[in-house]
Length: 308
Image 1 (cartoon, rainbow, N blue to C red):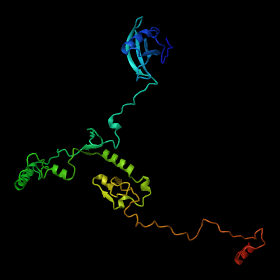
Image 2 (image 1 turned 30 degrees about the vertical axis):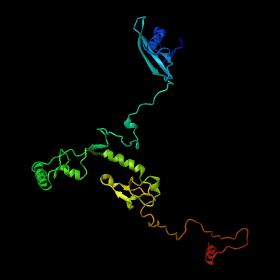
Image 3 (image 1 turned 90 degrees about the vertical axis):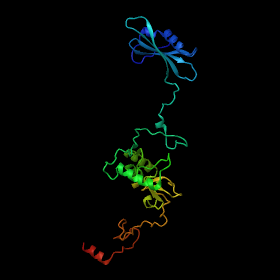
Image 4 (image 1 turned 135 degrees about the vertical axis):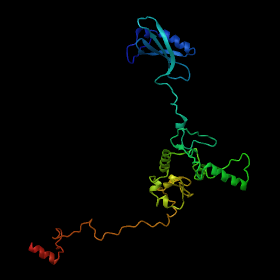
């Protein structure tokens, strides 16, 4: 038997010596000839020991057959507990499984692919549900709408069978459809924030292109405004020569393709200083040591020096 390795406590002697019992159990569970040498044994608890055998089966490099044996208190008979194939410290393992919703990346969706949205998606919230119906005496009540529909049917005739009709005229559903709100779900506040962060990261004011731009997109003629609350900070670029053509851009984004880049006035330059106080003007009072010339001192300065 090979040298035993312990992790936490001293293994039970009878369980540690039951190598033949453990090997027989491993060979019964495995295919013939794939159980190798005894590798180690580990004490799992009081009178519980796991024996590890090398696995020689192809495709399971580094894996080991683990056979756990146990013994009852004051009993001399060792019994089999379980047999299982486990990976070893150097075994080849498949990468950890990641759900498809976490593996999905922008651009993975191709033609014909369907991307189901979770019912509890935090980016969405319920839209118009039809629960806010007007009271019966309201001008938008169902009775009033039926009268309006009856008048329209007399003028336009009855619609063909199977044709989907527009919402009842005068109903909240009709108003919601006109405003673009008649959808099962709409963007939640969280969905708006994550979309704004994603768009600003790609085409925002902190990008190198925007930092070198002559002016932001908010003053560019190629910017197309969008509706909704996101339209207060974003638009769509329509300049075919811009790197952001067809993309949602921040109003603070910019590029060299600004519509007014050629006629924008140059930034004004400050006027030169009238008095330069950053330099020192020499004013010698004595003759230079290497020459016999006298310093050019005015009569007023000489008179002041003589009185001092």
